[in-house]
Image 1: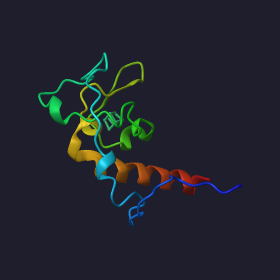
Image 2: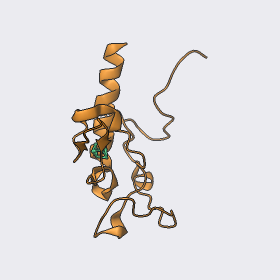
Image 3: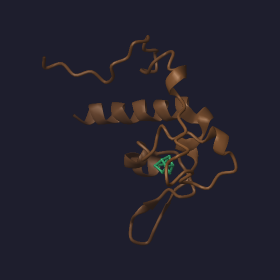
Image 4: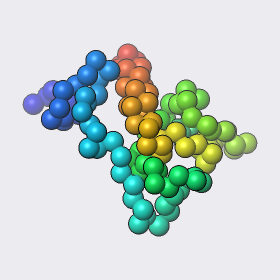
Length: 107
Ligand code: SF4
């Protein structure tokens, strides 16, 4: 009790801080979602829904995605496919770990 864990992983954690063999869990395409695909794409077969509600949103301008800020200050991600590309799973996890590290350093 009292200890906190970043994740409960049945596989080895690599030096980047995430699961070494998450290949079974890196891709999920929820094609029956009423919004699928929620971003315009020509490649629905490789559309990854695992990062729905992008976890990098909180990184603001440092997320590395294709965003713009509207006049009212809202970050508009409608032109971004970074979290939804099948091949971007590792990139997303690396960015998340970077974000968590900066949060830990602030605490
Ligand atoms: S611009 Fe892309 S990567 Fe950045 S928060 Fe929005 S969806 Fe995520």
